[in-house]
Length: 310
Image (tube, rainbow, N blue to C red):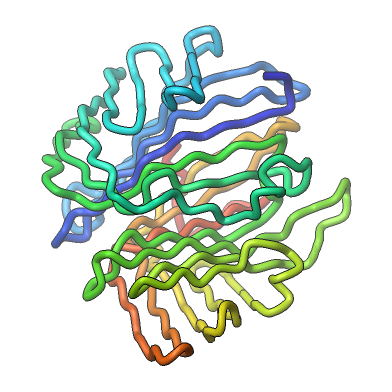
């Protein structure tokens, strides 16, 4: 793989009853200019218990091995694939069994977009409703993971989207087999930043309501700020309205490096609230996920209300 390029393979999961969640990432970065690196990230959301924590351990790219078939990533003494994740790090460890659900992958982009140069950032949810069992240790906190629900994800591209809000729900409170993937993104063509476009894929009650292209996004809307987000749109005979919000104490701040070596700031909560109303095709539904939705903002400027933990 030639620079500029980045890739992230990550898992996230929520405790079935408590406001507690884990987020683990295996990333490789080939910047231009700059030195290539492979990082392992371990994040624990536990604001009502041990507190939020985050750890990033860098490695040489020579210590990393990424495969597409079988899908897997290894960085030093850590690895992830579709059914297992393990890590032995200075300051953290994990050993997780992953049980994928029967649901097909979620593609937030059109098939053509995955092979085109634009957009520069690609994303896919390999397993939107997976079960996790095992342990995660971060510092002096050991978390027992027993039948947690979450997802297995894959992001890659030649450059991060300049600014975005990203959301994900792996099972709503009263509808555990329904899922959501949504983004409001400011893409760019060269130095020109484009107006925000909102894409989403909602699966509920046997329906898949999806907007995957910039052209189709003319029927959607989205506006966000730290840490509230409203979005909606029309697709497939449905009208969708949604809101995601997070308390600052449920957010972890991280520092990212883009493929041009510029610094970006990521603010992520795995404990956000999400509310969706969906109407059309004879269906009228309200979907709620309290303190179990993922809500992430990427920005060029740090947010003073949330500390950067890694």
